[in-house]
Amino acid sequence: MTAFSAPVKLDPDRFRHGKLDPVADRIVGEGDVVASYSADRIGTGQPIRRPFRWNGHWWVCTAIVPGGAEAFRLVDPAVFPGTPTTYPAKTQDAEAARNDPLGFYHGMTTTHAGKTRIISGPKTLFIAGPDCEPSLFAALDRERSRDC
Image 1 (spheres, rainbow, N blue to C red):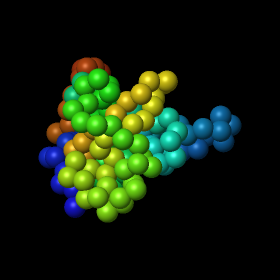
Image 2 (cartoon, rainbow, N blue to C red; image 1 turned 90 degrees about the horizontal axis):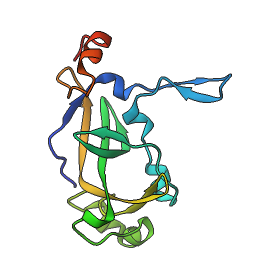
Image 3 (spheres, rainbow, N blue to C red; image 1 turned 90 degrees about the vertical axis):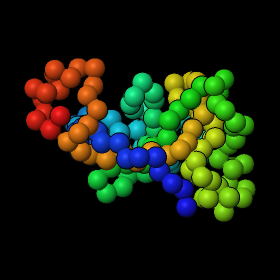
């Protein structure tokens, strides 16, 4: 089983599930963490959905869990400290992939906005909580939410 790094508390709004706007035929009001969910796209070799920003890095959500989400950091191939792989190559040995100490998706190559990125572990658990990291717009966030 893969160990998580310490859970990270974020503004609960970032985990909000959106609603379908039938007129626009799209989801509205969705938090950026939830909206970045891309496990379905990684497994099929499609570009990932828009990643979310935390701690100066881009992250992609790979699982929605009660009260939060699991995510991995995205890195440029030039700074990835290992040998990148693909979903099909990594899952040739499914048991080893499931038991990777840095997480199932660690090392997989993906694309976003036409650029290649590597999914880098360890996976991180992000949870909704009152002690969330302030954004660059902390003053505006305080007006918007009493939780942070």
